[in-house]
Every structure is written in C-alpha cells, then in structure tokens.
Length: 100
Image (tube, rainbow, N blue to C red; front, top):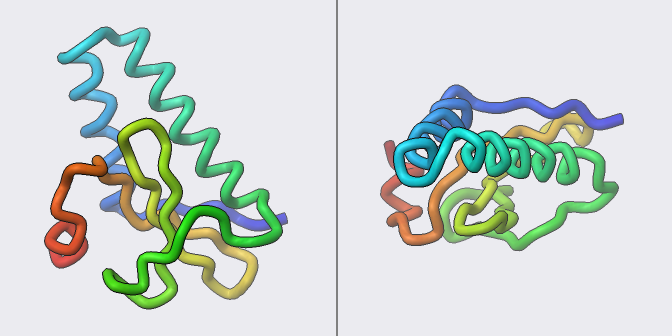
C-alpha cells in the first residue's frame, strides 16, 4: 500500500479551493468538489503506475492529473509515498506558482 501525503502548500490549495467554491456556488458544492479532489488523490496513490502526465518542464519527477478545472501535482517518493505537491487551477501560471 502506498502512503499518501500532502505538502503544506497543497493543503492550503485545498482550503482555498473550498472557500472559493463556497463563495461562488455553495457549501454543498464545495464539499462535493473537495471530496472529488481528495478521492482522486487516493486514486493516484492506489495506482501501481503514475497516472496523468509528466511536468518535467516545471520540476523533475513531477506529474499532474486533471480533475475538473484543477491539476493535482504530485511526486512519487521512495516508491512507497505519493506526495501531493500542489493543486492548481488550469489557468494559473503554473511555473510561477511552483516558484513561490
């Protein structure tokens, strides 16, 4: 079984996405989308091979998987740990966000 971990930035991203969705739509919709994002993170961790696409132009060993309008960025560490690095909207300047 692969362990799933989140960086501090990824946790902040999840919180920001939830708050934005509450303000824009509703708490119910925010809870559903948050659940979808977390379930997809678990799906990535459960996969026996990396899913999504490589984002080597941003960082070595970085993968991304789209969920709705967001991209879940992750790395596989030590072969047994999936680290969710960031969760960013597809329209963001991804390179600059990783430089933060």
